[in-house]
Image (cartoon, rainbow, N blue to C red):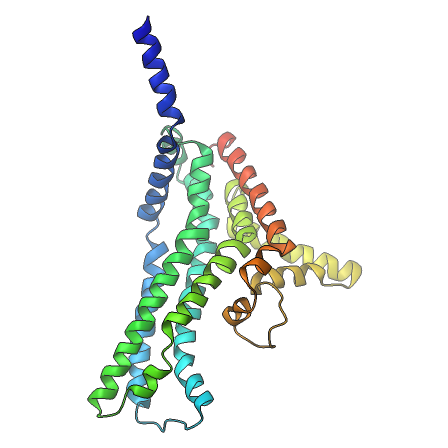
Length: 301
């Protein structure tokens, strides 16, 4: 009798341990990365293509006259590095959009949902693992790939200049990659990880409920809402709301400044105090809760 009671208590303690919850979640994230290899292959491919283009560009322009104005020198040096960051992070954002649209719809379409529901993994864990890919994995992956790409660019430029007998001191003077990487990481966490959460929540919701063609279901309703508002009230408040969510928080930064520079002018406490951030997170949480219910009760298409 006591042995049976001890066994039951041990099972209950094991089920209550954090590892029982965390381990299936981590396994589910690894399963997503194993099944959807475009999550890391597409950003890596874009970085490789850009490096090849940068090598050709540097080889053709390394004999160009170096400007004497320090501000122009900094702009000339920073331009390809900023473009590399924008390209890789933009590619990761696009991958996150298409991943979210297919994440829950794909398993219903190919009927693999029947297999995954037979596994000892809850619907909550599955949905959280899927939303982790665009909100956490892709932003951090794009940050690492961008940082490595920029250092490779710097080394390639240095080798080409030294091979031509030119000095690399001016270039390394403007190579503040460490400071730039901190700003880029802050931008990744705030914008791609938190500010875009309602976008991914909406896309996962469409992925969970769309009967067919989830891409159309994802993008048609916003166009319809915008068109109805424009025709009925001659206003564009909904479009302005989407634009604000897409380009990032509105700050008093100079007009035309890059988004990372805009976010750098907005401190962490100021960002966390934005009402739009918490409203967006609440909307994303509501979409994810709906995703859990839809996955729980919907079968394959």
